[in-house]
Length: 116
Image 1 (tube, rainbow, N blue to C red):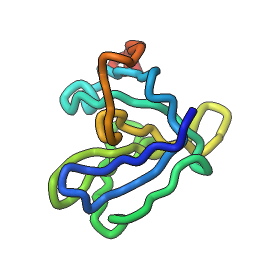
Image 2: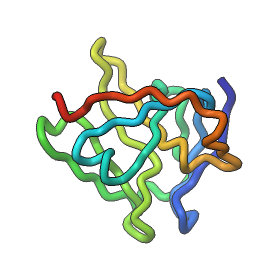
Image 3: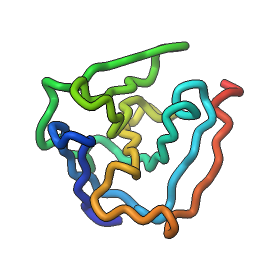
């Protein structure tokens, strides 16, 4: 894992996170499937929101356990927030928002979010 920088399209929302950029999850739920996010999960203490907190809009659906945040200027989703099965607070970082991201180096696991 390495600490990497990321941002939304307009650059208002900026973050740093300890992420393994070679492993990602593609979820097929009604939200992720439409947005095309490629996610990596990190504990909240491995994630720093540098700027743009005031520009994040939160959207929840279904069981309302995941906070799907996006920049209210450009609409890009940099990360989601939620809790893992053991109760750990987590961030699901959108790998596509990382600086110098190369999708050809990512081992992608599919997740059947539609089944939830």
